[in-house]
Image 1: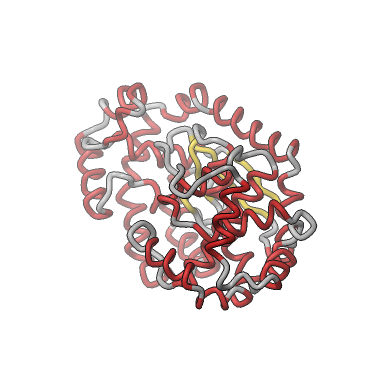
Image 2: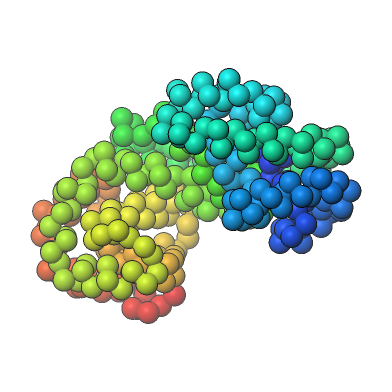
Length: 342
């Protein structure tokens, strides 16, 4: 698997819609951008943005629009207005890439049509030239930094070995946004838009979550760990997690704990996360207790930790059910932590 980092004028042009609206809370994050493009925006465009925000129930207009746009081939490179007004091309892309959205095709295309005049006005105000001079150099620098760190720390080699290539997509694409308002946005096919201000840890955590979810399932780990459902310690941890994280059932809770353990272990092992136990104790108010136990096993059993499948089979062979409270305390002790630390 490869992680490919990119920049995209189109996606930052969509992000601009979040900033220039009349009631936008994001204009304070980008005061110069608002001064250049929000203040001179016409009343008609302001009204369109208000109507779209009301329809979406959010002043964050770009995430759902970018998600739908990403269904279209070359969405990040072709002229944005051409993409948004090509109904035939949009329908063909839906049929091929996201047929589940076909019942909403008319409503989705209507959003494109409604927003097109605002996009056109922002381009006439000179946003392309502004972005090329003010933001493209910063985005390119961040892309280079991420490419360099993945290569230098052998991250892709480690993740491919851990999950095995057949359980991973051939590549995922991460678009670094200069105007992403400190948000991460999921696109189709495991792709995402992330803010250039994010740390390497946060970029990889966000962009790999769905990929790791799928890999864990493909490896049959949920079935292997099914006996944990009967463990009283895990049942208590699941019950306590409900006030913080919405898991549909205890099986889903266990699955997500393994996903978190895998992410944290790989980020720690390859130098992106300095203190994984501190992270897990503070993340979501410490809801991922099983992840702490699994992380401890992966760290202290390096012979098993090259492959998730091998590691989990080895761990289950040690019959952890009924002993998880002790294993949790042992993990914290070896990490120099105490229950309740954050």
